[in-house]
Amino acid sequence: MPIQLNDYEITWYMDEIRMHGMCAEMEYHQLDKLLQDDRSRQTRLVWFALTAFLSHAAMMSKYLDPIGKDEVRAVRKDTLRQLLGVAAKSEVLPRDARDNVEHFDERVDGWVGTDNQSILESVLPNRAAYQYLRIEKKRVRRVLLLNEMIFISEKRDQSKFELDLASLHAEVKRIGDAADSWINTKSPYHFIAPR
Image (tube, rainbow, N blue to C red; front, side, top):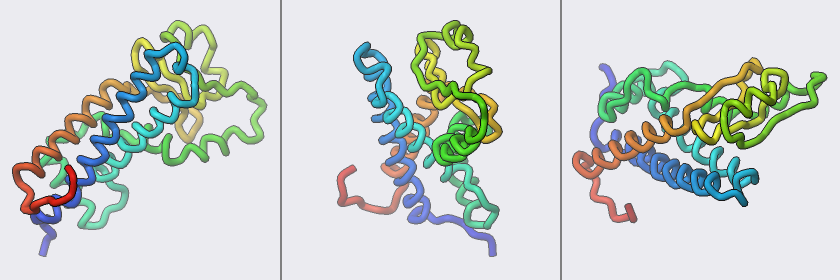
């Protein structure tokens, strides 16, 4: 008999998605605050906030695009995407950002034994500054283009990828809000813990 999630089971997933959506929202606002302040723009605090935001977005992605093909995961994916209105082209689904955060050690491993001694980690004002630095010749740990809110890093194969943080933030917020709405209107649970 095919698996079908009941509302109790769906609540378990929705509550996790809601929590990660709230945490991602807090970290994105912290990131924005740090970027607006000249004293903090080029500090590690920016990367802490960005990594935390991406980690929470990655957790949401795991619930909506699980790795593995067992029946529960497939049903979960289809059910949650349908209930939360997550399209196949949703900004939260691509794995580049998720892999970058979760497997960053593999990027560093890829730098071992190379002659390239330029590894860039910086907030740059715009794409012109990025192009001026001839980034294609350098390893990129983390770059943020401030005027576009574009995060640039490397994939496993050392190629660069770009992530539109504003679009990802909007989708993460929308999904988190949709999970919260579902819990408030459809969940059979009566929560006694803080919401």
